[in-house]
Amino acid sequence: MSGVLALVGGAEWREGCTFDAQLLEYSGGREVTVLPTAAAYEHPEHSVDWATQWFEALGAKVRGLMVLGRRDADDEANATAVRESRFLYLSGGSPMHLRSVLKGSAVWDAVVSTWRDGTVLAGSSAGAMALCDPMVDPRGGAFTVGLGLIEQLAFVPHHDTWSPDKAKRTIALAPRGLPLVAVDERTAVIRATDGTWSVHGAGSAVVFVDGRESGLDALPG
Image (cartoon, rainbow, N blue to C red; front, side, top):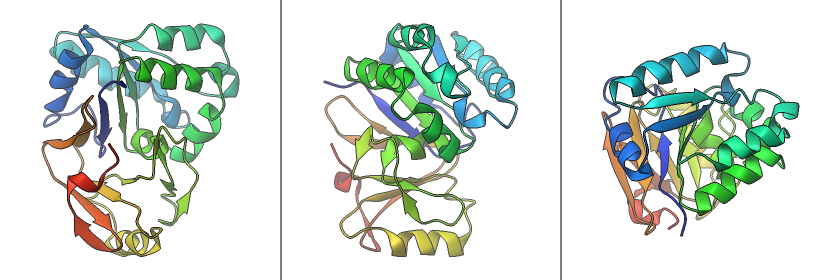
C-alpha cells in the first residue's frame, strides 16, 4: 500500500495551507525533506527557507536536499536520504527541469520506492505536475511525458490565477477519457492510502473529463 499523496496547486508553505499539519500527522514524524529541484534556476535556497519557516511554526524541522542537477540525482547519498524520509515535499518551479533531472535517476527510484512503502509525498505546482503522466506543459498548456508516479492523470496548478485561454486550451487538448484536475493555490487534492481523494486548503479543485466537469471519483485510485 502506498503512502498519502498530496498534489498542491502552488503558493506552498503559506497561510491557508492547513493540510500541511495533516500531512505531518500522517507521516508520524516531525521532519520534512524538501527537494527544491524544480526551483534550481530560481534560488532554490529560498524554497528551503520558506519551508523551514512554515514547518517550524508547525513544530517540525526541514531538511533541504539540494538535488538540482543530474549528478545530484544520481548521488547515492541523496537517494539514501530520500529513503530515510517519512515526508517528502517537491517544491514548485519548472516541471520540465524537474522531469529531466529526476527521470530514471537513483533519487527518483528512491522517491517511488519509499512512497510505496508508506512515506508521505507532496508536490506543489511543478512538483505536482511532474508526478503525473501525462504532464501539462506550462509553456503552452499542451501535454507531454511526466514522471508517471500517478498514471492516467494530469494536473493543472494555480487554477485561480491561470490564463482562461490557456486553461481552455489544456482542457480541449486532454486525451479522451483522461481526468484533468485543476487546483487553486494554497489548496491540495490528497489521495489517502485507500485510494480515495479529497480537497483541502484555502481554495477549490475542479476535475474535467472530456471537457466536462466531473467528480473526484474520476481520479485514479
